[in-house]
Amino acid sequence: MTNIFKSEGKSTEALRSLLNMFPKPFSLGDRVGIKLHWGERGNENFIRPLYAREIVRWLKEGGAKPYIFDTTVLYSGGRRDGTESLKTAAEHGFTEEYLECSVLIGDGLDGRDVMDIPSAGKHFDTVQVAGIIKETDGFVIFSHFKGHMEASFGGSIKNISMGMASRAQKQRMHSDVHPVLIQKRCIRCGICQEVCPVGAAVLPPDDQYPLYDLDKCVGCAQCIALCPQAALKIFWETDISVFQEKIVETAASTWKLIGPKSIVINALIQIVTECDCLEGKHPPLAGDFGFIGGYNPVAVDEESIKMIGPDKFDAAHPGIPWQLQFSYARETGFAK
Image 1: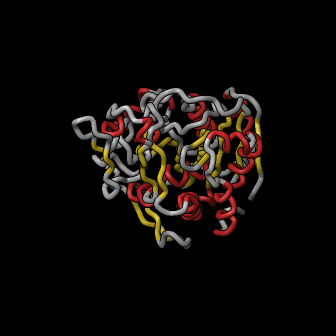
Image 2: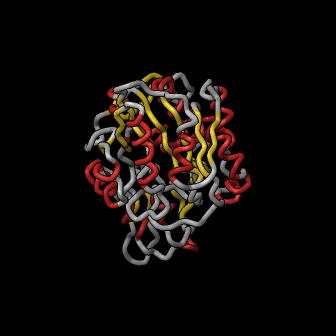
Image 3: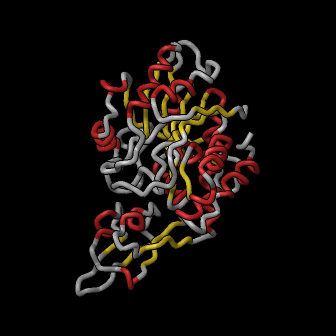
């Protein structure tokens, strides 16, 4: 189904209005996972937990048994392992007491609760996803729509692909991304070395510039994102389009498994230039539009882009062929 639902405003009442537009998608007693991003430690733009609580209450009123979850990540910070991620969630207000449901890590506290599923794309034969999927009857994919330094935008597609993938699958998607130094901007502050999760960035003594071991690099782009001088840029080992296709392929494979009993909702509020994976407060990209939902992530993301304006994403992250996400989704049959 390609039905698109919209509700203006940023209140919980606006979100509830959107939720009530969906014909009851879940059955009595269904275990329903709410996939969201509770924000990196120190991030100020994440979507606040009162919206997740509204979804929880709506699901409970329909007889479902909801929980919220996210997965572990590649980069350093407050979500690299499950224990720290739950602490970060609590710091941001995502607690069981407030949300009235469990708060879980989809791939387990150690990141090892994963499973392989088939993929019919050109980049992967299988993709590896969070094991919690096999224990869940349906999903609400609740995404903060905003900019992204590698994909240009982040919404439902990315929340499913990166958001529900194992750390190994995240690495497979990021494998073509590496940093390159612009020496004239570098002040040798050492932040790249500090934030690298695998020790690939090294700041030598004697006033030398940082060195990057690309064999160790996992492509998380944390050093690029957090460099205070913008002295690092992305070097794409292959064509930049490959990353876009890998995101779509991972999401498409996951959606084939979970889609028949799932819905997607994008929050078009607090729309900023960067992902909630980064700490700090980021520049606004657009004003608030409200909430948009439907049954297909591609359709909902595409409509979200149209509402905000494609030019805004091009201006924030020039040179990224984000349109390929939609054309490749159609090629793979993901966009229906």
